[in-house]
Length: 376
Image (cartoon, rainbow, N blue to C red):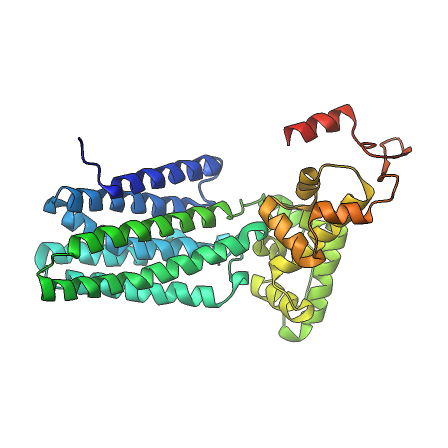
């Protein structure tokens, strides 16, 4: 029987996730190109681990070392990219993060003894940096789609903890080498890395899925609201401008809406927008936008007989799980239960395109809308 190391199975799963990410990003690789590179690095590392510990092939060790020094910086680049306006996230600012891998490569050529401590130092540098991002709260992810920002935020935490835990594995291995001569080191390295790569790969896939595509700058400029306040003392005025934007433009219906896009519409820095919403409304930006979305969903549930899935999209949600969670948070009921309690006894009242009112279940289901509902 052919022996297939478990890391090879993990690499196959990571490649499948990478292919899914590539299909989502084929229109614009800028959306999550960093996450795709990170996922590719995870998959390659899993293959190398399988070759090293599954077949006891030591020739891959230098490649594993360089790749290990590259993964933590790539994780930082990917997640920090969700915290910056796209205009601020330039390649020229990212290249210094490739220096640790270059340093490890040079050490492997000229002086191998410090390679292990150098890799540990890389992880101990980028792990706390990712943890610092996570401690700032979900509003720090200004480029993450608001419908998925909480999942991106949890993925950031998973990545930060996993990278911080990597040096702990090295400490365990060093004790094993000292006490047993490395009898368990292979199992610890292979098992620990397989678990870590599965967690990290899933986190990268989730975070990249929530990255909102960049919108047309010309359209964005044309629709920008001219807002002058920017100081902390002007937060009530900023909050009022945001409220007006939500009412007049119904911006919350945009399923790809993120904090950066709201800030650009107002002509303000993203941190001023999030601060105003946090202080005036007492909620995160995603909760504030979802409150508007749930209000719209309740209106549609009470006044139309449209399918709940259609209403979810019309209100601005892209994920059914997020829609149900937010609806329950605000109303204490599921969308279906809320509709049963709040629709008129005779069914919803709907207005046709010619202004004629119809009542009763299915009143709004024209042949075209019925076909659309069936597709959903």
